[in-house]
Image (cartoon, rainbow, N blue to C red; front, side):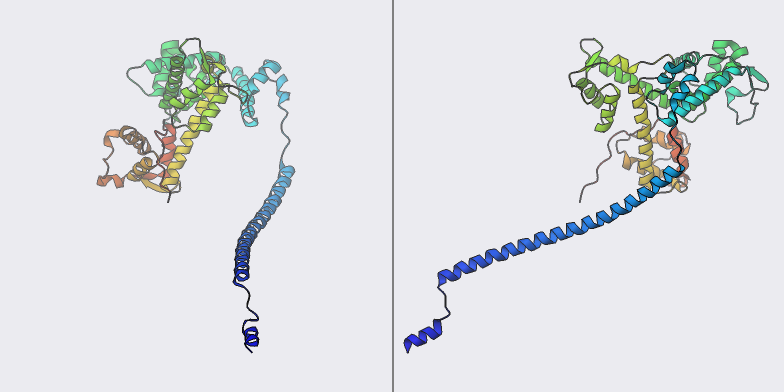
Length: 416
């Protein structure tokens, strides 16, 4: 009876050792299952993302296909610029020199300049523009004036002489007045007006010539002469730094030394900007840091005043950085171009995007933007500050004229 009872009570019982082994196996399998479920869920999500990407890629493909068809339908074939070789004075050699490194838009400018120069040479006289207030002071004349027909080289040399005198001046007169007085000193009062018209027509035509285009922009008050002066000072400082590094006075620097000079002279330039300058200076992917460079060649000009690619790249970067700076100012203000903005708001925003601005530079920017003498600018927190209001577009256009540049890095916002 006891045996039967034991069988009845414990017939389904398993040994503890077997039970614990089964329990452990079960636990391992549960963990594997959970892990597989997590992996599956992750793969499923990735699959959904890939499906969405696939759909968006299909839409983009269809859009690009439509755009391509539209472009194929409406576009004109690329011009064959070699046709210009036989038309331009100087033949293929001169055309290749003019066209080197230029895109289609720039080549159109070159071609227009060549055509314009031919038309200019055919003119014997220029009609006077009169004495209206809108006419620049150095062009106010009735009647006709003689076209002096100088070469481009002559005009460039004359402009260089004008800049030398301008930079040596003690008492600064207005740039247009200085220009006419300069011509009177060089050619006499009788011929000054003829030379004024002649040079004006030349510098208005030759957009691709740096010296002419910059002189024209300053003469017409589209750009402040401080921009030109600061650029010249930067180039001079850069040459001085390179000369200091050249301890042997051989006129040679290694690529590594060039990089070091650029980084010390432009401490807030991004690495890719420094790289662009290095490439413009002659560095390429096969270059070694130990390769030598004749650094004086970076600052040479040809007879028509064209700078080497290195100095051109410096100027391009300056203009790009100025545009980025003003765009950042607009974005930080959060206003549309037609909206009005107060002086304290511009002051505050400039200090946000460029905390390194000193008070003198900040006031010079505000003076230009609101056309107020620095001495008449209200102090910070004065009540009448709020009364000085102007359209944002006007502020940006006025700041574009002067030498405006970032003074230091913008403080990064702390990450949450």
